[in-house]
Image (spheres, rainbow, N blue to C red):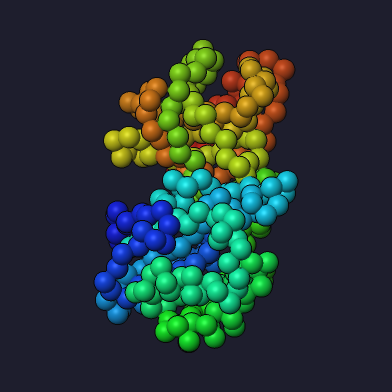
Amino acid sequence: MSPVHSFPEIVDGLEAVELDRPFHMAIGMFDGVHLGHQAVIESAIHAARGAGGVSGVLTFHPHPSRLIAPGRATPLIQPRPVKERVLRNLGVDLIVWQEFNRHVANVAAQEFPSFLKRRVPALHTVYVGEDFRFGKGREGTVKTLIAEGNRLGFGVLSIERVRLNGEPISSSRIRSCLADGRLEEANTLLGYPYIAAGTVIEGRKVGRTLGFPTLNIPWSPECLPAYGVYGVRVTLPDGNRVTGVANFGVRPTVADDSAPLLEVHCLRPVDAGSGAFLVVEWLCFLRHERAFESLDELKAQIARDMERAKKMVDG
């Protein structure tokens, strides 16, 4: 995904959209912005560029399940800043975050297309996945959207589901991969490396005493990947990138914390400390987190992890 527009406009709510050119809008939750989502979004981008229009994404927060079934809410693969980062790299002109509240949830399926067109008169074409559902009770289908779009004066393009090894690519499939430590498969489904981002905090300096200083990031996404050790690539505040080894978990040998922590050891010295903002791309899964009998045993394993990460990440 090569960046085309570095700084898309980001607005809260359809009411904030003001356009004087045709608007090509992809609609969906797009959790993970995986390859299937990208097929929908890129269709909007390409059409807008060809016609001199504006491409955009209408997405929602929080996830509808948080309102409709809070006891069974869907854990998001990525937080809002990471989602925006991926959408930016796709080259979207406009990102619209629509609050999913009771009012939006109660819009009837027949009324939803009018709901869109009234708020964005420049709406030219809507882009969705072939299984897109909308409106109260999710009663609206692509067929409903096409019929109402024809009446209201906008087109509808539905994109077939993208499959990998014969199975549809889906956010739930990616969540399962992350939970099981199948990172490489998750990355293939996403179409880009899984990302963690956060600000470094002062740690206990246990890694330093072991000879492997770490950058500690308090990071706890809704959809937790498997606790374990990963080969990563870290983007530093100055834009430089460096290979590293990351441990995500509760550190049973040295701390046994209740809250997970992301610790990153860079394979070369870096100028980054407390307060530095890091972007960590997870490239390979090395092993599950476990307790060791001694610190010497842990040190030996970390050295092996570093060698494996260097081979797998840098080739």
